[in-house]
Structure formats: C-alpha cells, structure tokens
Image 1 (cartoon, rainbow, N blue to C red):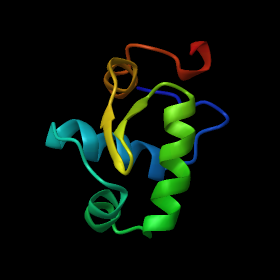
Image 2 (image 1 turned 90 degrees about the vertical axis):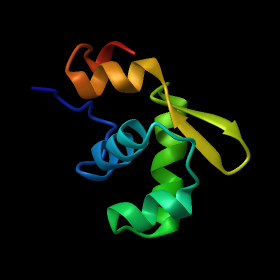
Image 3 (image 1 turned 180 degrees about the vertical axis):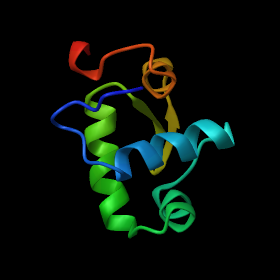
Image 4 (image 1 turned 30 degrees about the horizontal axis):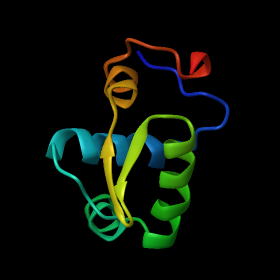
Length: 83
C-alpha cells in the first residue's frame, strides 16, 4: 500500500497520477479535470506541485505526463518522502 507524503492532497493527487498513468498519454489539465471530475484550476494547482516533486513532467506548456517516479509511487515501490 502506498503512503502519501505530507505535501500531497488526497485523493486528487492519486487520481491525477492514475489518469496520466492509465492513459499512457500526454494530457492537458482540462482533459485530466474532466476525467477525474475536478475543476481545471484545482488540477492545475496540483500538477504544479506534482511537477515540483518529480512525479509529473511538463512536456510543453499546458501538457503533462507521468514520470518514472510517479509510476513507482503508484506501484508502491517508492516512498514519496524520499524524493
């Protein structure tokens, strides 16, 4: 079972990471927000935090993909406090 870091907001951070991981695609905040039933502004704020901690990468302005660290977190293979 994975344990979130204190900086993480649950369940939105997990849902963002899962949307990016399961799609295997580069996604915009709007597409993620639509698919996880959250506002685009809320997803934008959380994406910035996930990028800062290395779980998501900004491919270009407005487009994001999950990193290896994000995938490892979802699999329960790393402690997000160690990143």
